[in-house]
Length: 252
Image (cartoon, rainbow, N blue to C red; front, side, top):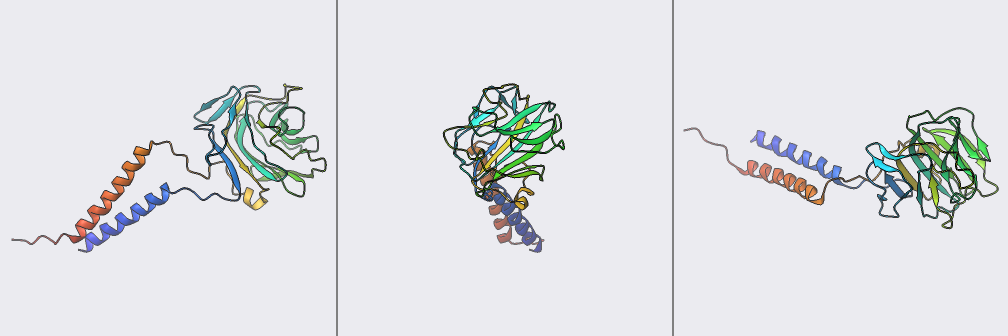
């Protein structure tokens, strides 16, 4: 009898953990869009999909050549955060990472010789982007107009955006990894595995917990696969219940 109780308890414990693994993760902060680019360009929150400009989904993310980035029709407004997990193959020049103006002007966030720069209001001189290595970039603009950049959790600069160059509207789509239409040379080939957008400015403490992985589970199985797993878990529970009810065998 004790054996059956132990088996029943272990079965319930395993089923509970399996159900928790299937449950959707809670959405932290005020996240509005999230993209796991190792799978598709679709928003995990059910919103607008990213638009591809020539790159391809691969095992490690969306792979792009020179100026083959992504765009998104969205309205971030004056307070927002953008998270990117990406890498460039060549950081020797300017590489545009985020453009808020639909490619009309030079303004935007760049890697410049591997260092973080928001042209032309803020810069750092310490290289943080290494050729072929993923880095997690978090860019924020708060309601008081402060623009900040973090790479791998470390703040690169903070500057007051007095001119409002960090205010983004639905008039101009967001553009990722593509240079503006004037110069067109400040870009490199590379890969991006994750993009996340928030409708407020994340704090340094919140940014320290971000590693560039989705907060919403990415389901790659067909719905039938989930039903099969649920049926198997139910079967385990039924077997455990039957074993607890079955009387012990008597010896002759």
